[in-house]
Image 1 (cartoon, rainbow, N blue to C red):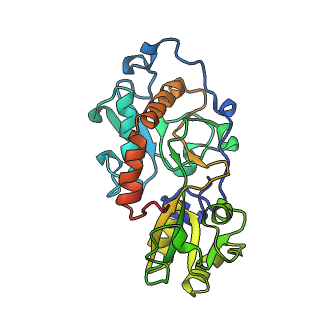
Image 2 (cartoon, helix red, strand yellow):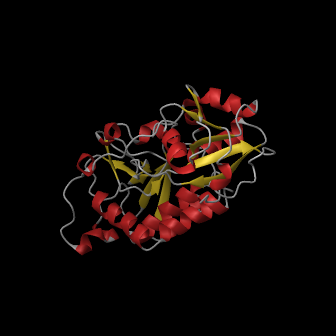
Image 3 (cartoon, rainbow, N blue to C red):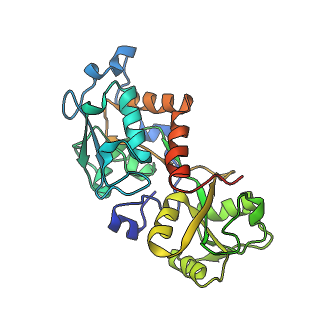
Length: 288
């Protein structure tokens, strides 16, 4: 996902209001895969700094993706994911080092100063021409934002939003999500620009704003004073937008990183990390 310009300025969110479909597996295929299980042990990996796993991200590193602007503390969703992947690759915490990398620089063509970068970067075909992506470690969800004292601020389920006046931005996955999942009684108000939808919420022309969760964190923190995230939900019937770990094009690490991500998915660890940092700590409960 391409970040909204205001988020690039803060170096925080990587969510765009217009979601992009994940790239086909063929578009992100890296160099030759390891030929044996031992090829993914840390002493067999080709690293930027041998003996250390170097992970890139932007600065400042904002919540809930990181905590206290310190990627190395293991707190926040992406810090926790990064260390979980490192652990699967055989690295202890003291064998991980962090490199400051601007958001746009991470997926620009050229040699990288990191083994992989984690910074809410959506997997897209265009970006995959310049870098390799891991399998997705996070599927972007939709969220409901209201004013703190709004009529629907206390909604605890999707059914409770049926009668809400809902606003969305045109061309985003949020519009499909509202129609297919919430199915409100009235057609949602559709706005050409995100700022128009935000002003509609501020002026109480709508009861709720539906947008992707990463953008909602920014809206509630910096754009609409006194607003809150009522909750989050997964959309159906559409190709999900996913965040991927970024690697240099042709990286020999890709297959090993993919294996690490896939294992964290299959054993439930990624779900636990998401629940801890993007639901409980971030105050965005699941709406069902």
